Image (cartoon, rainbow, N blue to C red; front, side):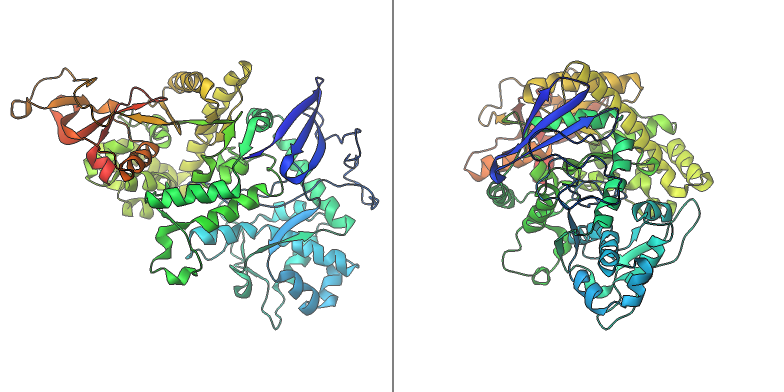
Length: 602
């Protein structure tokens, strides 16, 4: 495991931290004043330049290392987040750019057009490369979805600030990138915008889509300083955010997995036929191209996940960035963007972390905000009513409330909400018609409430010196703090009158494989005559954790026998189903003591 040692060197309002990378033999010092943005260190030889806003920085000055990333991978929802820069610096002034474009800019782009951007052609080229960093995320989105066409929304105001050499710089850069040449234009724009709803969309030209990502070392002071100005603006926005401040303290306890460990975990998950939260089967490309696989879209390739992991961590962890209103203020960092099966491998103070997340949070928030009638709604509830696989319900719930109305009607979940929650559905549809944000208003409100809840939880935990990782509606914590984290999460959600609870996962489980008679909890409900010989199990005691399923399958693959026994699953008076159940003991979720066979086999 790659350990990041994060040591506070002095206890003042100006926090000086030492970041030690054993694998790289590098020690850097970084000063952070939560009141006054970034203040370079005066200690050792690795101090950063004080005045990052100056244009005339000497060659000897060491500028903030900057890299770009956007998007989300594997099981995340929001994709409209802009670039961030590393918290732990390894390679200074390195950015990631799409492959081939530097060569084309230098060899095939008109020098006259480049000089319209800046009189120094080298500066002009690097400004074009800076723009291209904004499209790097589309490469990784394409890895996840080969049908993705590569379009990304970029606001004019954002681009103007990002390339703020002068107010017209970004337009001149776009002109240069759109120039036709024998290799093909680098950039395409749809030039279709709707005020309050849609910005111009941009994508790489066809010869450059999916061709890979390369590192580029910035050389000109103009480009370096523009990036520093841009990221200081981001840092200014984030520095007072409670989630941001919590994460700065949390990172010091984190140990990342090595590539060898990730590969071994990938092999293990392949043997178990493990699926991601989006329902994709984990698989290796090996020596094959994607075209070798008949339906490559149903797979999540280990090699792609490792490439994403390297992108997020090889140049250091990313400074957390607080999102805008569109994302409800969600915070994004290396861990939120990391493939979830790799994220599970990180350790906190040398211990496997425990994840505590809310069950079915957004549907239950929607019930609160839009006048629903149910309480403690679960994915299993919908799966039972719709007679469908619970995995389908989970995947659909990732995007159902963010869809356009016609898309919601085509979703397999629509029937449930139409029949079981007609008032909620009616209110959501009406708001989508009336709001200036159209169909996206629902997710804005759900994200905003989620962030409000998680912020309150984190603030309370921090007062107890408990610092946690953050992945939207989930927190990553040390095992000794797991029960307290769950307790605070349950308390806060209850105060908001949202009927759900937090659950613990990513902890080892112990299965009682050959003992189906002891410790059985029989629910005392009205007996059903035809099934009176079967044990009755309260549905609330059933464990639907994917982690549990994966570990049971691993046990079975090693020859252990899983003794499921006939049982009645009780959801309410006269509301029962028959299934087969297995007793388990989950150290961090002890109340969920049964696994049902129908879930295990699906």
